[in-house]
Image 1 (cartoon, helix red, strand yellow):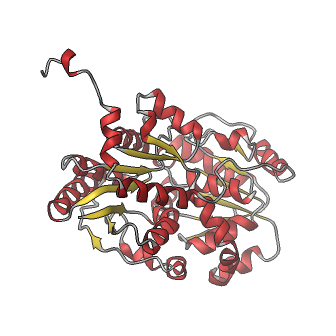
Image 2 (cartoon, rainbow, N blue to C red; image 1 turned 45 degrees about the horizontal axis):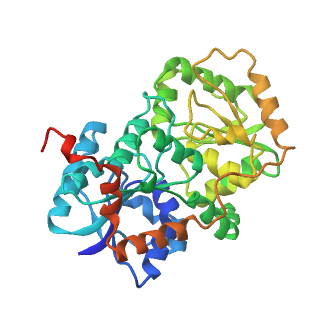
Length: 385
């Protein structure tokens, strides 16, 4: 029996977990398997960033049906369940809130303890599939690593036991701190079309991919209108689903906007660090920008990261509302450039805190202890006696 099975499925989660994986590899006190769910093709991990981090290839890869959310989730549950019939772990660990974390259902059916990194984040927006997934895994988990005390409080309010939740800080701080010099080399991997476009000029970086934004004609039109309002140059790495929606909508982007296919992480962080500000509906991009000191406009009706508003690194733009004064959004984003904030996401030790705790739990065979404490009740009062 190995100590930990770590199941990941999308490139951003591997980036966030990369130092955790490195520390697990270096430790002689814990052994683990790295399992790829197949939600994103493993080709994603051939990115130069992963090569330079020496991120290992997965020990196992699932073969799943990614036709839609239902087939993806059901096949991940099935593959996870089947894997655990032949491979035993003291606990199985997930990160984030994607389809992959629903594999926790397959783990729970084996009564194997579950560990969730990035626990108790809440948007309270039930339209978002991520909200359903993060609530499901949190209430199945035996150990939850929450990035902030405010996230832990949200879990406690839902009845999750205090002993289960450990506040760690956000491991993306570790990555951005440790590899800041590496990110400066991202310019070397940018396509010439991007370098020739931005030159030494100021530019705005844009990302937009959320379903509730791109699949709503009204919200999508509002976002396109917002992007078209700026006079600055705009670099827009656009996902293929967003490209299809833009083409089908018949809307056009102005000539000061350069659309490119999705780019690597090194290139993206280089662009983010050098942008005037960023328009995005991505939660992770909003975090990364806050840590790097780059203002953002968060194009979301709701967010699981309200702390970026509290430290004043971001302003809210709700695409579901008729926004008449779009120029004012860009004006306010420009104003944020002159402000200084302290990001709230931790001190860069989250990965070590998580791995040290995993080692302690594994040595003492204590993963199940948290589950017992969470669900302890007086059997004499139960109809099950």
